[in-house]
Image (cartoon, rainbow, N blue to C red; front, top):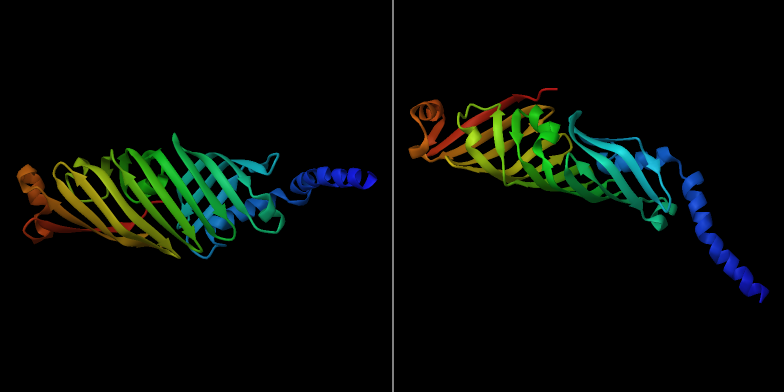
Length: 260
């Protein structure tokens, strides 16, 4: 009977011991660094992350005021109201799997981060205006973006769609860029390169594709434009005329440096 009672006490003490280890043996700074490194890849590329206001909760939960992700040293997006939980078995063995949820503007964010540099972040209906990297790329736009960001080693792949795009202005010579109302595409970030794998635009005056990349804050992109010539006014036709490659097909360079 004493052995049974002893065994029950030992079993009951295990969760207490684990919680004590969580609060007192695992430093907050260590966990914060592991979360940042799971996105940044230990500084091997131009993706970086910074967690502010980190705090531990009970039962291996945690929260933070914000998770800021940057590209080329410039703010790309900020996840606020960050909440998450850890896998305790992996945490005690030195690993880290952190399930997160939060917000980008009014949009919802969920995902999983795994140390040392792996994870997936899903974004649902976040305002484009709450993603500062776009304005630095020379795009002033509204609408709501849904996206899946896959992180592996020092690279990230971003699949996105914006069904209600509203371009108010852009660093482009296209006079009717504001008429594009839908976009989707894939962008990859590897090391110091941001590459546009595919990006299509659709609007009332035609279609467009953006190709190229951004390296060390310098844009080297081209916009392939396939307008409906019947819907262009004379000024619009004249302005794009010098970029014509073939009938109904235009290629417009988009170059320059990102604003900081």
